[in-house]
Length: 252
Image (cartoon, rainbow, N blue to C red):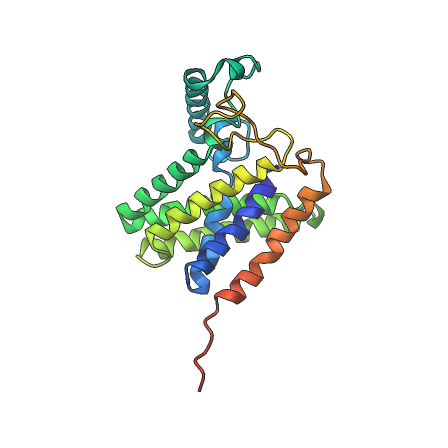
């Protein structure tokens, strides 16, 4: 999937996590923003990706390091059948596994639990990345409207970070869970494409530890109306989640 599609699906699943955990509407909105950015994290193994270029040299170096780590883990855990496939184990390998999604969530939890400032940092970083990606994807809106939406997204991220730095917002465990689910949303989104993802790692499937699972209705990234439909449906689902999060008034 394209980065904009990943971010959009992260908006929906992040909001859904907030609703299912019984959060207030404001926290559901923040979970949606966090989910948007978290749904881009697995692509940190690619320096040229949206998230790999998001913070310039910082994320670029992190991407290079993660790609190197992915290749090393691939070489050490690959079976003969894996090595015979001619892959280098870089993009769409280690960071696209289920254990990696859990690690992303645990790292977010640890940072958010360290201090109120940590919570604000996680929310600001993920919200700015995710909402900015969604805003830049709206090509038909024209450059002026896109810039206004990007500016609004940045303002939301800054405001969220400021509020959370004062001790408000979702609990650290909810932030960690939202990040893990957002990363998982990315992995499942790539499962829908023809390249597939190693969902069973570290277990061996058909002689391969890095067997790439694909959906029965797999499509080409960036060239499918199915992907467009998923992106817009995900964004349209956010208002529904916000309505569901509004407490029902007690019966009189």
